[in-house]
Image 1 (cartoon, helix red, strand yellow):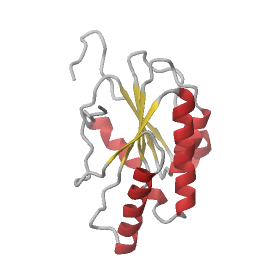
Image 2 (cartoon, rainbow, N blue to C red):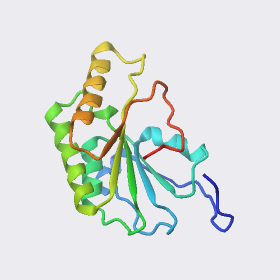
Image 3 (cartoon, helix red, strand yellow):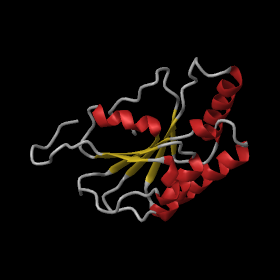
Image 4 (cartoon, rainbow, N blue to C red):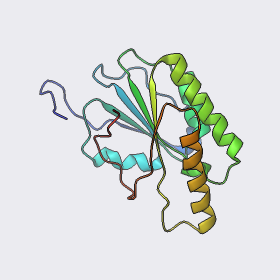
Length: 169
C-alpha cells in the first residue's frame, strides 16, 4: 500500500486496560482517511511498532473477549468512511461455553448487517505452548466462526504474526 505524502503516519494503536472494560469504545474523532478498524486483544499492542497502512486504527483491548467486541460494536455509530472492522479477539473465550461465543458472534453479525459495515474475523493459531485441552477449545472456536453467519473469516495463521496487507477480496 502506498502512502500519501500529505497524510502523516502516526502509530494508530489505542491501548485499553482490562480494568476499564466497561468504558472501552471506538473513538468518535478519528482522521477521515482511517477506513479500517482492528479490534484486538492485548496482542494488538505489538502493532504500535509495526509498519501499518495509513488507513488503519488498532484498538488493543487487554483481556478482551468476543462479548466485549460485540458490546463495543453495539454502542458504536461508525463514521461514513469506515468500511471494515477486523476482529482478532477470541483466545480469552477459550474456556467459555460455545453458546456464549456463538451469541457474541451473532451480535457482531447483526451489527454488520445493520450498519452495512464489513466484519472480518482472524482465526486464532493453536499455539504449541497451550495445553491440549486449550488447543482443542481454540480449534472448536475457529470452527464455530467458520460455521456461524459472520461476514468473513480468515483461517488461523500457522505463525503468531498477522501481517499487512490483509486481503479482503
